[in-house]
Image (tube, rainbow, N blue to C red; front, side):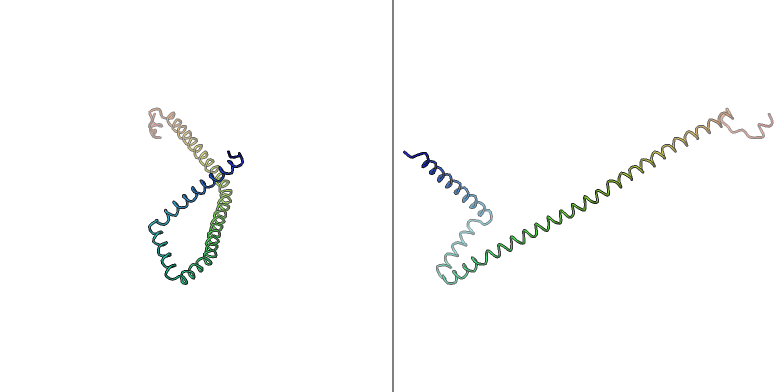
Length: 159
C-alpha cells in the first residue's frame, strides 16, 4: 500500500499530465484554426523530404530560421508595443484636451442659458405689459364711445 505522500505525488503527476494534455489539445486546436491540418501535413512531409534528400541545404535553412526568428519576433513585439504606447498616449492626450474643453464649455453654457432665460423672461414681461397696455387703451376708447365707433368732431359739436 502506498503512503499518503506517494499517493499525493502520483496524483500531482497525473494531474500535471492531465493539464499538460489539455494545454497540448488547446494549442493543437488553435493551430488547426490558423493552419489547416492537411496543409500542415504537406509542409511537414515536404520539410522531411528536403531534410532527407538535401541535408546540408536543410540544415543551412533551419539554422538561418532558428537564429533569425528571435530578432524578428523581438522587432514585431517592439513594434506592437510602440504602436500600443503611441495609441494609448494619443487617446490620453485627446481625453485630456476634451476634459479641458469641457471645463470651459460648462461655464459658457451656464452663462448662455442664464442669458437666454433672462431674454425670455424680458420678452414675456414685455408681451404681458403690451397686452395690458393694449387692453387698457381699448377700454379707454370704448368708454368714450359706447357704440364702439369713433365719434367725429362735427357730430359731437352739433349735439
